Length: 199
Length: 199
DNA sequence: CAAATTACAAAAAACGTAAATCGTCATTTT
DNA sequence: AAAATGACGATTTACGTTTTTTGTAATTTG
Image 1 (cartoon, each protein chain N blue to C red):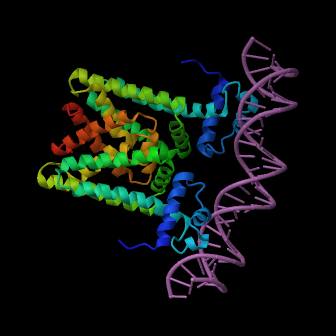
Image 2: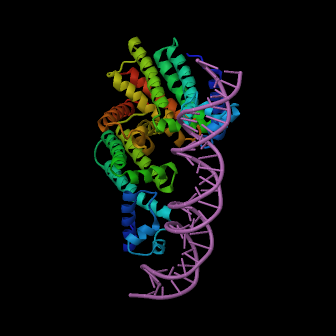
Image 3: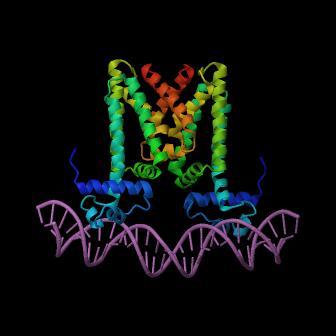
């Protein structure tokens, strides 16, 4: 990990605050620079554009949740436990962001919808974690899918509703307990499906 | 079915054309009325508002696909066949609309996102068809779920990605063959899950 | 009297302009 | 030399004005 310059981290911190408090619409480079105690022109020494600065803020959050997911994937537990916790952590992380930080969630949601590089890369890395855990399950005999690639696609497709920002937005007003119960069923099914070679 | 007045159907036809060709943004009551050969005020004799007219256009499409679904659900085939065809018809109907009629798709998508009455009612009726077919499958012994309500929720949740407009928009650029293959896997799994009492 | 029109107020959209922000670069500061 | 600034044109946004559309109601037409 490269050591960031102090000004860069300061800008990023202030930008993060601004985005969380005021939202994308009222997020301006001038205001961020002012609060960071510098001219807006100087911000461009560290971030090539306003969009890049917003992406950087979102990326900080994405990387943080990626680390939590990687910790789960790297753990010593059985693959099925890890897959369950991976799905739950991802679903909960996104859902908590929606309820606790709607502005940041909205920025993330747009980055995903517009296929920004940061979200595409995040998607690739998260997918890799899923693949790793499923492969581990296959190696240990916990999972016995008939077709490994189809099994991975199946897991991602079936959990889509509880993970993808666009899908989570649709259920913002559904009681969390109800969502949790349905997700729990879905995961239980997915694990059995992987274990019994249905997929 | 109540016989509609000729002017009403004419307005609806012109409105449908306009929406398909020009999209929601450029859809005006004045333009529709003009093309239908009347003053805009007269349109309000038949539709209470611009929004109601747009909804009526979308509703025509929704009802048409509902009829196709009902035909499947009412057929004499085994429940698992019917459930598969129900899911495929719904997914294909929505996806075809997205590619062949993007403006109308967009209007539908917004009606769903904003929870218009027409989309809520459509959802309720489509869900009822799913319930009927699953119940039929339970009665005939084709399906043996441990919990009927959870089984229904499971089917709806797992197919969400291939049915919901918001999810379909995300995959507009994915080759149709790839989507079809994944959906086919998902359905096969779902039918086995229902049949073997995993859910 | 049902169907449609004209007339009109309220709401929304389109337009044009003023102001702010974005992004670049030459110059200054440390 | 690295960090920051001031100045400046290009873009975007904000805002007041004008036009169009929406929706209602009184009136006309067949």
